Length: 333
Image (cartoon, rainbow, N blue to C red):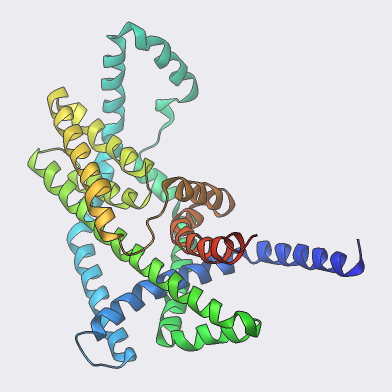
């Protein structure tokens, strides 16, 4: 190996170590970019109807989002906290109900015994106590979120200058291609965020209405879980269904079947109709790629990594297509 090759390897190693040491700073920056793109989508759409400067549009959007967020928090937070507390009280009853069902099925006794060895339900604390134990982590996440929002506002005030700065430090022959790549990543990420937000909001509203109509306890909490987990392809909607189905089991098996049918209908409506329509003009994220990204970043960065995995996967999917596929593989003779 010559000195040039050795120097290249050492440089890559140093960059990898530096990236790992600054991973939280990079994570905050990436989160700010995602938030900035989401706000930029709103600004662009607003400027289609009103001819106002970007700064004024940004102020109007921030005021609107703050007002809507405050209204929803005031209206929903008390009920949501009550339902979280109620869920902590329901868990022991649900455990007894499941054990009673299993005990009537001899074939499930072995499964119950194996699960009992792995999980001790008596050790489960009320959810309120668990939330208090996570207060320190919540404060840290809240601080990171505040930094992301501040950086996002600075980025969205003048996105052109920030993009041009990155383009100018790249080699001149590749500047045009990098500019196109940035543009496509912005379109893909903005379209994906818009589509998935509409999809998750629709799932939340329809689930809440359906559970409320069926008179299922903890309808708001269950609907919120279903809406949030819509952002996780494949396993998210199925995992979200566990909570309302388990709660309805406490009432009656017939109600459980009704809730199961409701969730199956809504899952297929979201997966087969709503999401494909919303994402037909942008990147439809592959479920396997999304799940792998979430597992990888979840192991490296924990919960913040899981939250950022999907937006980063959308951009990475565009980068792979434009650089690896078009620029390398398609030109390989």
